[in-house]
Length: 432
Ligand SMILES: C[S@@+](CC[C@H](N)C(=O)[O-])C[C@H]1O[C@@H](n2cnc3c(N)ncnc32)[C@H](O)[C@@H]1O
Image 1 (cartoon, rainbow, N blue to C red):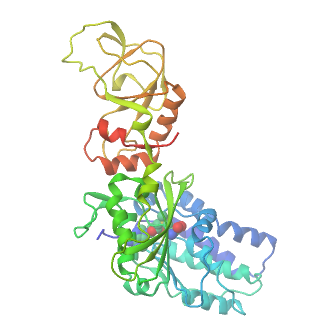
Image 2 (image 1 turned 60 degrees about the horizontal axis):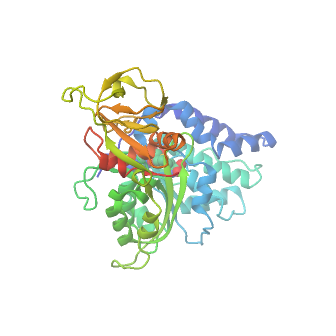
């Protein structure tokens, strides 16, 4: 089981103080409504970005879901009177807000708070988020009642199931939940010792989904926003198999980039916990999904550069010559000063990647587009990707994709050593 770590999010209390002021505001008017609308949507995430540094946010996997994506996840769900809706990694409750918008109101604000509090549950390791989660749900309730009725000072008694705790260890809440809504942390952690479906490092999101499904009751619906590599990665097939053993797969939907703060491709998963033994019905849609996953090998020929500087003799024509230190990354290079004799060279346009690529490095596949008319000799610390359509635009499109978190994550999972291999580069998923 990964160790739960609490990070310093004390800066976020400033946002909670603003929510508190809105919650207790004596008078409500158009300005109040506008502020509440904003604080129930993107402002929670924007304030997190402003008040807490990126290192802490990354380490905790704290990136909040905007209302568009939350609405898309919850979709056309409706909740019956016995519904118990739980977000194990609740953050500031963006997913629970989408659920609460579908819950009936009571006759008074207090009754609504009481009813919502009985059927909404959320846990998070950060106390600052729990405070914000309760306040935002209370603000939604107050706004839904027209705003005139005042909120009680102490909201904790109204949301007893929204509390600071480790979401991986909530047997009771999981046993009770009819619906699990989730956007778990995505960071890579060592696979737990008892994990039969993964070894090495694994996305925390993958661990969360399996652990929660293992503890959930039959019939529990789990809807989650997850890193796309779990859907498309060839190394994640055992995770997909395990999820298919535990639950019926109702929907797997690609979404695209999470948002402009967390540049990671995500997909939406909707499953229902099976009642008993494994079954062949509603398995993961592997064939459909993998058939349309294209990789670099579908568009490029991939080789290691041919020049081994200290071994190769200066023979053959005098060529333009590149090595990792002679070219900048993430740009086009047309002008090449270095020259050497070599029999083998590549005709531009093509993309080169540095072979040295440490796990956890900001960019695992640092790229440059090589242009110009004359062929270029390439040192063997670079990997060459030659576009089959001979187009510089295809090269630039590849370079842009290599810079994404999706590719970093793919390579972090695919290859743990310090050097990229031709095989791993060929398997990088791409879209053109
Ligand atoms: C990606 S954010 C999503 C928050 C919220 N569900 C949303 O969609 O906006 C993940 C959250 O998980 C929390 N978290 C990380 N590990 C956790 C754990 N073991 N138990 C509970 N919460 C955890 C982080 O503090 C963070 O708030």
